[in-house]
Image (cartoon, rainbow, N blue to C red; front, side, top):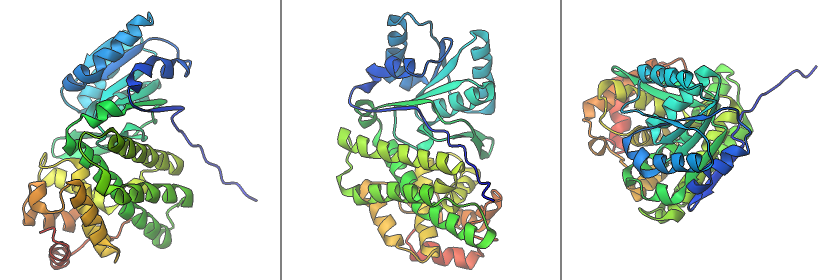
Length: 349
């Protein structure tokens, strides 16, 4: 008797393109949410987009309150939750890059209220995924949360964001190559549940970025369009799988370990990009193709470009398997000699 079931949570409205920030209230009104919004943002995104969104709500005679956060932490999540309760917010709107969107997403999930994502930088697939990432002391926690009900991604704003944020988003997507390989490996060796559909979608997004690496350039809305579509697709793949597996494997464990050893040294996307070069080498795949695509985009491909030394990379490689109970190509860990060889052969150190 067939008894398999699945429950896929996807955004109901995804609005991407030139000037679409002006359509925010329209996109939200179609969701038929109850109550007034609490807008969560940080200082620069508030100037770039947040204040304009507030004006739209006010023009529509919708009472909106704003919380401006300076950092991402579990304490800030609690502060946002308290603010939402105080104003009896019906839903939360995250405007910004990683931290504002992750904080709003996690707070809305804890409160059981809707969440709308308005990214101001195409820096990671968290703009549409069901996961939030929050640093705490010398580590970073990845926490499950509800995906956004709507995403409004204005390519005019995204194209104007610092280029390093966009290259981090590109590297985060390219790392899907090794994430899916790890997922397949875990399915074969550990019987981890696997979705061919989610895996194919995730691989397609990575291929989209590698194939278009030469045409993705700073300040071009066409580039922001390509990157944003890939980020959305990656988030959808995770929703289909009900897991971060389609976009998170050993390269993410490597990045999380770097966060502990050398906190703040580099952006998450850049770290997983470099990690993917090594992991693709360990899988026996086309690691040069990944390295060349990252280099073409202007993303880091070496320890020096990440701002860490060779010893830090080797330590991260040999201990990354300890980060979480997730089977990857790292298995039960690499020894130091193997880590040095892999990093040297790929040019990472």
